[in-house]
Image (cartoon, rainbow, N blue to C red; front, side):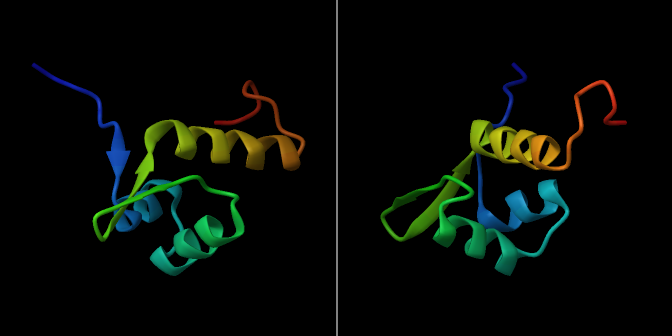
Amino acid sequence: MNMEKLFYRPKEAADALGISRTAVFRLIKTGELQSIKREGYRLVPTWALVEFARALETEAGLSHREVA
């Protein structure tokens, strides 16, 4: 059974976005990237990464067709 990943640790989220772990925590702190904190660890939902990436594309004036 091959399940898609539902949550990412901050380091994994940073790798997926191509930014630093510190930048991920900054985005979480400012509310630009949604996350869940539970029992001492933090998780970033997959949908939050997609939503953040789409917001960046919109901010840059790109449509999904223009993104390679």
